[in-house]
Figure 1: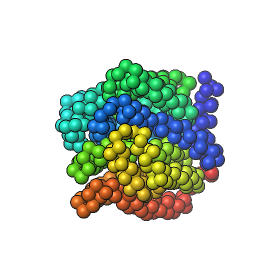
Figure 2: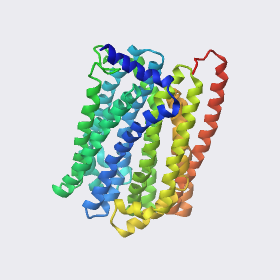
Figure 3: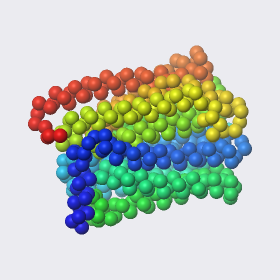
Figure 4: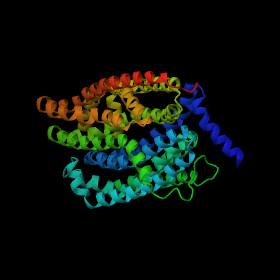
Length: 462
């Protein structure tokens, strides 16, 4: 027991002593694999469904499920991201009892919130899907898929929440393996259920549910082991309002990002339905699934840097703080630039992965060429926003999260489509990405200057 405890303590100590590039690689690589694997669930479903069911409307049906699933994901991130960040900060302050209290409270919150949203979605599913742009042609597919996949979203929330905590407490490799198990299982079951058993769209949803059940089991079992740095203890499950507030305060940033994204998706889908019909909405599947790969890579980098930033900020090791931020930005820009170039020069290949209909493919090609014009800079914007979240500055993170989704996107959707039609809808994406990145650069520069001024106070070596 003593050796296990010593090894766990060494894992946390290295956050303040190990070389930054090595540390970021160690924590980000498993996180990148984990986040990409999570996105692969949806990518596999989209590819298999698009080729297994010979009806173009099935692709647009899947597209209108995105906002609903984003809302469920947002509620999971509200707790998961908030608890992981709080745990990193209090562990940097050497307050293990508080970290375990946060751990116990977060599992109850996740389950409670999951039960509430599944019940509400089940009752109001049809009107919700119509709000998010479902047409009479796509509604049956969207409804059937969500009815079957929604129960698995709570398991996805648990997996996301506790994967982050596992990573933040010194087990990045183990967090990666648990996600790989689920993704591998889904890659086997989805084609089997659709092509082998001919279960239709519900087959993809059931495959996802089973995969999430297995993944959640492996993740949660880690925190029942006493040899883990943090584990469930009697007395830590009792809900504490101060702990709940601290979790929700920090988790509010990623939560609002996803909620705003769902709201904007509703507006976008209705604009697409007006100016391009179901084919235009189907193009969103291609765009979302493609850019999600690169966004998830950047999010993995952010998840890897989060415990490093949180620990060193709590320990007041600011030189390491800035070095980690700088390296994370460089890595993020490399990946989103790669995505931007692929989207610009190979859009037809990408579209062909998700759809069979020639007219839909042409629409998706045009979509990718326009929407990825400034996607290269998105990596910087995501890292900048997560920098504030990792330091517990939820208000600033929330503001930056909403700049693209609310402050810029809504006015652009009102101005550009009436003048330029469908191309105007697609053009909103690069315009808003560029504008949001400029705001992020201004706020990040100001915050760095403020932290540097505070170095006049006593600071730990390192």
